[in-house]
Length: 212
Image 1 (cartoon, rainbow, N blue to C red):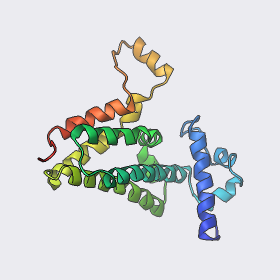
Image 2: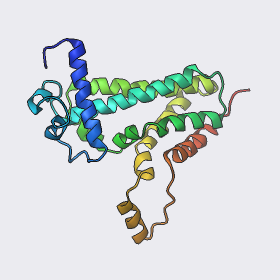
Image 3: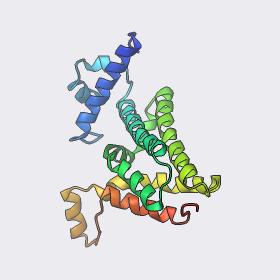
Image 4: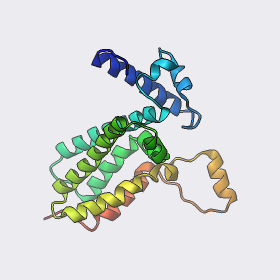
């Protein structure tokens, strides 16, 4: 690890994460290398290894930041509303994920390999951000659906969070994928991130209408 001030270390880590994010807009995970990332930063490839030991650690840090950003939206939703109907709650959560397309894209990747090739401290930092998302969804349900007990909230989370892994590949498709689906004769109705998420949430919430 580079022996600099915490502020400098954080600044350089952020620059590396930003470079990875920039490349990820036009390149796949497999195509992106430490060398490619160094090419859009202000320092060399060996310097990057002072902050991240593997490419997977950089992606995991980007993943963590995306969860942090979603957590900000969920926190605002929790703090700025006193009561929400099923339609309103589903709408606001779905809208928050519409703004987090990169989080959904990362979720659609092979997270097992990403986590396996990251150091324990980096994985723990990521899991902290991820765990915060689970906690915030639980708090939203506790506040707006007080009739839901702990088991019901846990069941909701165990359905919704695995569902999130499939949102991106079911809503963001390339022309090549569309053509292949057409040639295969698959009658698939494409939906937006908002639509597919909103429908899932409404189905889950219909069992727990707002308390009178």
